[in-house]
Length: 356
Image (tube, rainbow, N blue to C red):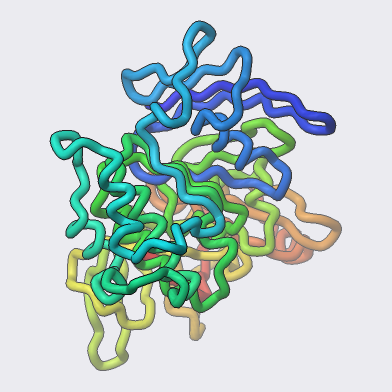
């Protein structure tokens, strides 16, 4: 586990954060601007010193009431919003700067590995990072951080300074790192689509406080949290490729509780995939729909109902033993269908986005 507890005050802002998360995979710190995400990350890095802070990473105490490990001694990598590459060094020498910080016998990540993971073969021969695109620069910055063989990787909104095309370019590389690395990552973001695509665990922050933390699906499926009220609220489904329908160019994804048809996925049968279903794309029927163009219909049970303003409600739907979906419908539809908690319904999924 990673246990972090910090109490820090500035004029007009205070951070009082206490969280414990698994020291594996990607943990996303999510919340609006000013919620304290970057401040918490800087505390973890040792860039902000607090009188009564605590940081334990697995079995190592990096900070407590009696001890404070300075930033340069903490075995971590830090990727900032802007790729801070050395302009006077070639791409290779930028990477070697990270590598040379670690004695050869302590290196867990090799240059060749990182170059392959992040697709840098075409870039490593450049004499200067000046001509790199934003996405390329950020990939080099991530690679340099990884070459320090960190025990913890911190990423502070690494895509926020990129345009949409650059984000699309870099996200597959971040997904690949997720599969290749055995290094826990704490990833700051205020973009729910990024979080849904990359994170395993989700920590929600608001006004300097941690208001919820847990597995991604668990947090996104709760109606009592701010994520349920966003325009792009929805659920993430961990599924596997089951069948390819060559005639109609479709793929069936299976998950505990049901299956979904999506546009053909160029992945082998049995491959794991992650799909996202937005609440606004889930409608409700109380009987098996007949003669509908919607092919994805799941048997569900209403686990929660919450008003969303004067005209809409959100439903929490239990599908199978573990999967939760959200549905956003009108209050009129809820009353017309006499929907109540515990009722079995049919969830009609109008759209499924394959995100990983």
